[in-house]
Image 1: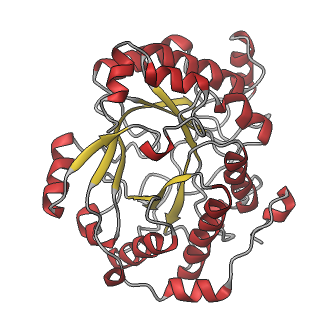
Image 2 (image 1 turned 180 degrees about the horizontal axis):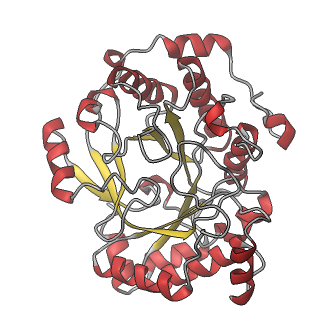
Length: 359
């Protein structure tokens, strides 16, 4: 189903479950008793991407794409640690294809034969600077994820949608089956994982319900999904088809809360979504917010300041607390690699900063 079988993943979504989820209204869910957020630095390792999604301003074409140097990565991480951040969010476009000869030439000069090999070095830099890596490198094979998983506190990829939408079209179109396989691979490797859906890119309400149920099925199988992001597409220089209306976001957020168990957080990004109008729809997390770097995927939409997050929580009448990039229920021997466990337990400034956010 959804093309996942082509990647060796068996997945089915029951039509009756879909109908039940489509009937969910915001009044059917309860507001969360608290809100959380993570303090991070956003590190765009490269802007090269094999895909050309029509809503995305992150990728640059061959000849224009950039690759951060180790020195640039270290400088960003050091600024983040000094600002009290705990997370280094690494992103890049899905595994750059052969058109990006300049990027591969730079990787070779740095002693790497792939972007994932370089990501491993970048994660090492982050850990040495006192930040826990959370990498979102798009579609990944088992071998690619295994190469970097032990140096990440958590990882992620947006499913976006199980539907075949024109926004994903073109000669290098996104494949929902491959996205599903990546989420399944994280489960096989015991990687705490973040995923979610992108609302308003041409999918229907039924598509959203099926996407959420597909994620729920993978979580039921592996118990590794720590949060779901319900993110609206927003206008930018490449996307002029508008954003979903408030009612769509409210119903979709309530559907997400209903589809996933209570211990899976529902996240709404406060620089992109009308969070104040979604507080009664089940959201309990405001995502990663940076006091140091821009949102490089949505550069036209600035991160809110901590005071703004506190105002959101005050409006909801609930406490606001900071968290690590790995949710507390996953801070255990079952889910932590030895390297990440050692970083959290370390008797140094970074370790104390991490442990201060744990009960």
